Length: 160
Image (cartoon, rainbow, N blue to C red; front, side, top):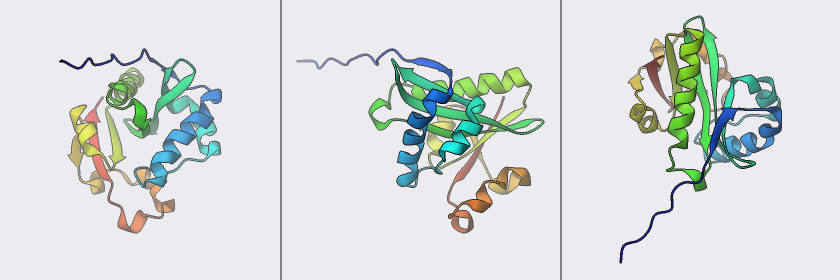
């Protein structure tokens, strides 16, 4: 007997709005507690809400990502999180592509990410690079991280 596979639920990808922030924080900080990404405060999320996209199934935010402009030609893809129960449906890839399209519209040349899961980004066309090749400006958040002196994140980059 062949098992049936349920199709993934319909999900909307859209710009984040302030009412999404509590759910975004739960997603991000859930992964941060497992040391898979950096935590974000409510203040950080509200202040940067225009950088974020979300994937929502009905009223439930199940994924988020931010594209933060770092310099005239460079942006960082950050805070990519998809709920464990909603992984495997292509939501992470959709969020990455939304950021890449946004970067292209803004005329940015490159997008980078610092990640503990470089394989996901490589599947989306990113290439690993030495973190030292990134401009110093990208380290403004890093110096406040408790892992700064022993960082194991991998830098990846892709042309926009």
